[in-house]
Image (cartoon, rainbow, N blue to C red; front, side, top):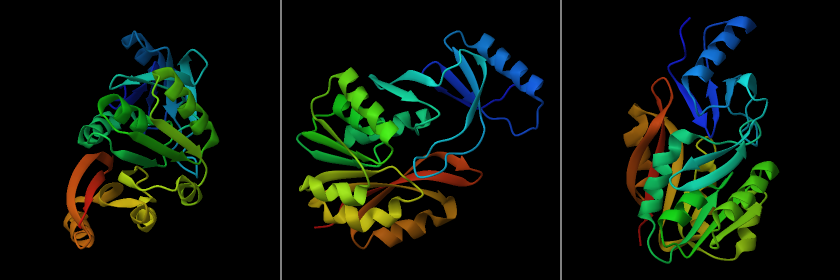
Length: 251
């Protein structure tokens, strides 16, 4: 029986996906083999569907190991506690989060829209000298874990708020040097809101899904107001990429 070539490891939980139809017995055989091959893994689960809904959660089915979905994931020198069934998190964006953190300059005020478990906030706080790193997240469970993650990592410059970003951002009463928008399916519709709270020479990091043919179209679309740099952040689907547009506001 072939083992899946691609899977995610989040903390000590391995999550795989198999497109072939397998019986329950065959699925468990695959899971037990994966458990044997990875000594640091304590739970093996199957991804039942894609991330969906307002809270970007997914159904997973535990097939081997311990019966739990909570874990602590270590990335870029920070610890991220989460429930993989109730919160969105992609370990594949680890290097992208570090890339953004390394762009942050001393004393910058940062806002992460749709901040989730606060991985961007944590990595930025760890690897930069940002003055403040704000986050807004609508999922109450993800927000709860985010608050715990700030406490676990002992960061004092992270400020997190729960609610709809279009409402909560108004309560902050401040503008930002850098706004991060890591919600590819919806970020584009919030760009005008982000502009209202971006400083004159600020930068927006806008995440989108796109095919390669559309890259130049997107660059031209935003080049009127911004200096544009496009970064590919990995494949999302066949011939579809997750991309980040680094948009430096033109003065």
